[in-house]
Image 1: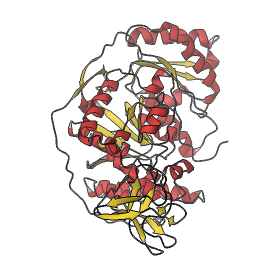
Image 2 (image 1 turned 180 degrees about the vertical axis):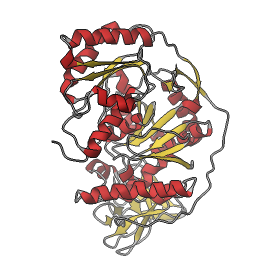
Image 3 (image 1 turned 90 degrees about the horizontal axis):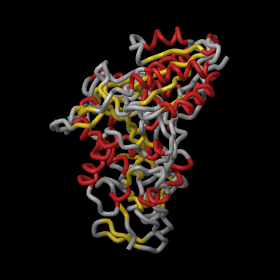
Image 4 (image 1 turned 45 degrees about the vertical axis):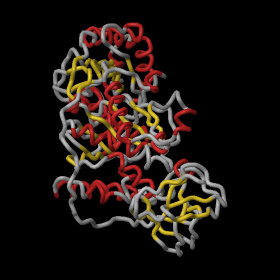
Length: 493
């Protein structure tokens, strides 16, 4: 007997938990259905006969329309299903109440910063103002590893290709993201490394950084130094002396900010990993904490679910602007708004953008939307925030860190070794991935389709995240990986 799961009572498709061979039977309630085709694991199977143009319903919502007639038991995928989405839309605010219950705060062991923020790492960050000094920054970080002492966890360089020959929003974005990272609480000390002749030079960047502690943030202009390596290592040693005296203390989850991201999703992502992260989000918010959902293009098709959770009409209008601005960005570049999912998504069982988005947005749980952030803007409101950023894994994860997230939760059905400026917890949507790529995956949500309890898994996962916040290294940290990427939209001079 084949094993399937029907996600919502209104669905007219189910998801194959394991591969179903043609001729195998499965039950939906009391109804026995025989598979008319092979159905790959994670993919959809029709539960009813459907005419051409029938809305296919998954998660209780339409995910597209059939392009030909389909018989019950047949495979539904890109060969017989297309998106039902349009371009720019008008929306109506129809608020729904949240079921979030406030509970006593929890605690983790972190680093209290003088600005009132909390860090979960005590690292020294080298932030280049321009790509021309990337190799110098990387060499400094490697050499400075010998100087680590006290409570300092690591010395990390964040190379990037920007900081000069940029115009308009691109230049503003680079400056803002770099300034956000300089001010990030996971950095106990920061060396800002400039060249000297770039557009986003140190004096310009200081306008974005704002007030800073001279013991915590130091600057070096390479063109003004006779020996930038010697001078840079001296400054890093001073930063290590300063940061190394800070010790972990007990800190409330009210100061914990967690970014929510997915990549390489598959047909199980919306059943296992994403709902688990959504449960975590609700649990953290119920304890006074904050989560940030991004990847705006992967809200298309599920955006009304988020809009109606906005706490105020003003937030609803900001969310409408968030969605339509990103659609307009696609149109300005003559790109198809719904050119999604990726090849990996499709191989994993996701057929349309609605299919992907309805699974992706489950990472936000059920909490009300408390804030809507522009790209490069930092969190101001506790609770669930929406952040403008693309779906690209590195760009979106960097944007989450820049917005203030000390941790990023990254759900995946395909796997990836990438990291971000902050600890990035990889959550597998299926057990096969978790076993195969044990060096990448930190937590296996795939057991949720193997009989594990969501309540028990959510409690276990919540404890795991607090362990990471208290110093436990994730797989990418153990491998020494640290990545960052800045959103580029316009002209390069």
